[in-house]
Length: 270
Image (cartoon, rainbow, N blue to C red; front, top):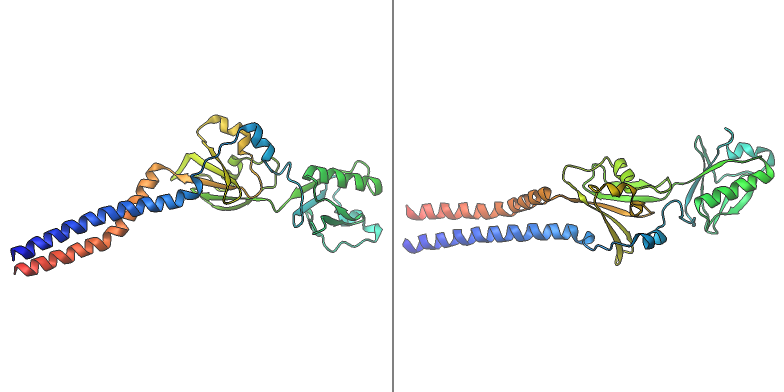
């Protein structure tokens, strides 16, 4: 009987130690796995950083980009404007905001009254001026157009209220603007550890941003580019709570085993 009692006590102590060790190990591993993509920090000097950025203002058009073109001078659409030319434009979708066009594989878009014009390689502003010049020569005086890119986007992950993809439609869109669109930070967010990830998956450039610093609002490094990933890390309190939760998940089957051992021990004494 004494030997059984000793064996049961050893089993209980061993199970308890295994429970603690396993829980701490798995909670730590879980956190590290979630953070792995965002651990590498590569803070680029501002002068160099500006050269490699591909934000909306200096993004150069390419095939499959989606353009929205609107005549700002009158209420007429491009189709109405050149209706007398007899040129049909089935590839443009007219809306109250303007017509949308997809850049073809040859880098052109079909504009009513002008035919196909090449826009690939131009920035948004260069494309706008080019279109204005062309319409000035044929239909308008002092043409005024608005050209927007509709397919540029960034991805927001982590501790924001509405994670997901968000369109970049304005020049020089900043981090704070997109975080606002995503509903802001959650109570679990670490506002001192927000990361902008850009580039190849194997060798990404990661910029760490601290929103508690007032200079962040004017930092050119927070201007976003197409396909940027924004990751908002958890704060220390949230990390600790996650570890406790992971520990509880691991501990439950171990506690069940301990309870079973106690029942066996109790029955053995009778």
